Length: 103
Image (tube, rainbow, N blue to C red):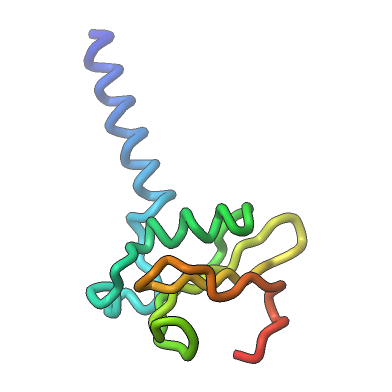
C-alpha cells in the first residue's frame, strides 16, 4: 500500500512540476521549431541572469543577435526586469528594468 501511495505522490508531483516549469504555452510558440535553444534552456539562462518569478515569456523575431529571441519578464519584489535570450546562441541580449527599453 505504501508503494502505491508513493507512486501516486510521485506522479502528482511530476504533473505539478511540469505545470510550473515548461508544460505551458508561450507567445510565439509557432517559432519554436526555428530556435536552437529550447524555452526551458532560455528560461534557466534568464533566471540565472535575474533571479525572480517569470510573469511573461515569449519567442519573437526582433533586431539584434540572431533575430530570434526569447523575452522574459521576471519580477523580484516590486521590480520587473526584461531579460532577452538569443534563441539560436543562448546569449543574453537584454537585462533591463521593464519599460527602460525602446521596444
